[in-house]
Structures are given as structure tokens and as C-alpha cells.
Image (cartoon, rainbow, N blue to C red):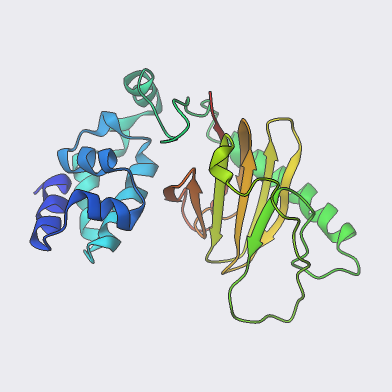
Length: 251
């Protein structure tokens, strides 16, 4: 059975509508319709589709491994190459549901993000060690960021971050919410090259980053940081221990 038909079968067996699944997963209704119809050209990159299937499996209390294996059979790795996605989706790509059309990030040499992430991590750790003298390990710079921590108390004392200047993040061009389930280094900069965030997130931490045009993001361990872009849950952008560098723009 194809993955789309299996998801539809599971949903209908629980008497759930597409709207109810969309509300539970925070995915757009048209994304779920496209997945059930296996209209892959209407969707984003393969890694995003896998994360969307994970969210749907969780909402349906279904076997995530089964659905992903069906998806891998329906859509092998080489059947959705970057160039094919861009050509198929260029006139209609819409990552940001409320902000209009947006181009995919520029294609890079697959080794370059790892080199850049490694260099950024080394430099950032060195700066962090120097600047953190006399401060706690979880101290963060003042910026246009809101951060919350888990209810479990820790030994370190985190100074309160500066409040966001806009009470409604969605009124800005790009709003990112990063939710950590483990420890990872995060570096984020705005469209003007200004630093939005550069520090570690620990399990249970959540930060919100906003910019009027674009946000460039480097995640040291993409397998423990859940990414929500303009209220759309993209899930984890990579596997455990793998770094990711990505820019979310708005045209």
C-alpha cells in the first residue's frame, strides 16, 4: 500500500477530518491533502516531507517507521533531486503560509555547510568561553529573542532576555521558534547581518527569533532542535549529531 493511501486509511478509521489532523499537527490543510494524494511536486524538499509524515503519524498514533518505509518506497532518495524540486515548485513554492512566496535556499556543495558549521562552532565556542567568564553556562546575549526553559530547576541561573519589540511575531517577515529536546549550539543572524542569537540551547529551552526580511540559521545538532517557521512546524531538519545551515527568506 502506498503511504498516502495508508495515511488516509488510518485517518478515516479514527473518523478524523483533514482539518482536525491539520490542527493537531499545525500543518496546512493543503499539505495533508497533497501527502494523501502523493502529489509530491506540491510539497517541499524530501527532508521536510519526512518530518511532516512523522507529525501526521504522531497525530494518528500510527507506526512512524511503517509510514516512512512506505514513503521511501514511493519516493526514493534520487527521485526528488534538488534541481527537480526547484523546477517543479518555482512558480508556486510557498513555505510561508501567511507571508507569500519564497525561494528555496541556494544549492551548496554538500561539504560546504559542514565546513562552515565547523568553523562557526569553533570560533563561537572560543568567543563564548572568553565572554562567559563570571557568567553561567546558559547566559545569552541581549537581542530580539524570547526564551523559555523547562519547569525542572537547574543549577545555573539564566538572566532574563530582552523582550521582543513586537508582541505579534507574525506581523514581521520571518518568525522562527526553536524548541530544544537536547543540547545544541545555535547561531542566527538577521537580514542586516546582525546577530540574533549565538549560544547553547538545552533540553526544554524554546526561543523565538524574528526579522523583517530573512534569518540565517546554523544548528549544531539538528536532530534535537524542532523548527517552527511562521506557525508552520517543519520538525527536525536533520539527524542526531548533524549540523544544518539554512536561510529562511521572504520575497
